[in-house]
Length: 320
Image 1 (cartoon, rainbow, N blue to C red):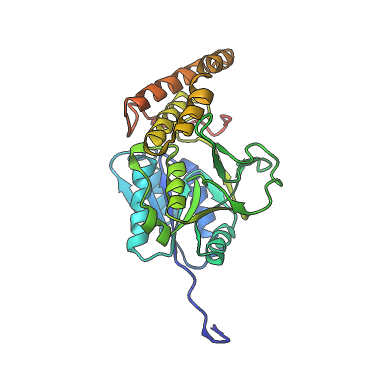
Image 2 (image 1 turned 180 degrees about the vertical axis):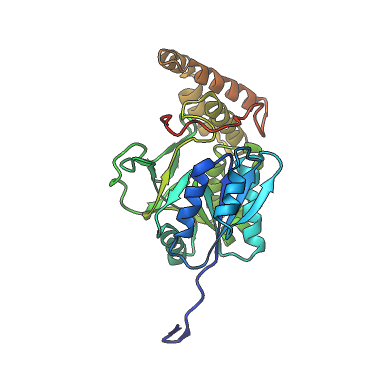
């Protein structure tokens, strides 16, 4: 349709990059919500990290419109995401949307995120309000804060009522479970750091986007719903704690100041004995020991995939 001053510009092309690892019904539901998006120029790419549950075949059967990259091994979140980000840049897309396979999106979510990018050319990354799925009455995150304390960073609004954090604004990072990045920011900041394998790579990526001169923004008008930690166990699983701790040290080795290191040692290392005692009484002592191992191996310079990664996802009824 022609505008007052001529033809209206074509809508910005967006590539949604969905990572699947034994996603089962979750990835199909995620793709259903992408197919229902109101943004007219959305394309979908599924990157499968060597799933063994039949989900890749199910994706191809139910969503033939989605392009697929099938990896022979589990390449982790970072390397697989970069496959999609590279495809977006090579394909001339205006932006790329990273979406976890256990995330659902409101029908206008992509439109809201793209509009936030288009309103302000200084914004390089934007993320939605993410609520817990299936309850949807509590916030999982409203962007994130890099405070160099426990786990290096924290999710804004975590566990608060869904109607809180109603104003958009700048944040330190948005989680990679639902993250829209403009192509120019990708070209300036680079891709995800693959040495992280999984966890904290989104914090580090947004840090580099901000250092490249772009803003990172939270947009509450866009909503997503997250079944948390489906691939690696619950939020206090040993694997999750190990990777978070190891990658915290990896981040500090690359970007940490003296003040940041001091905060990390005071709030995340010195408190480990008390944390172990507190969590051991709840049957979670192994997770704290895994965190200690992660810190030690991070200090020794370990990066990349962990020695073990779960082959199956936790049951849908296991609490997050």
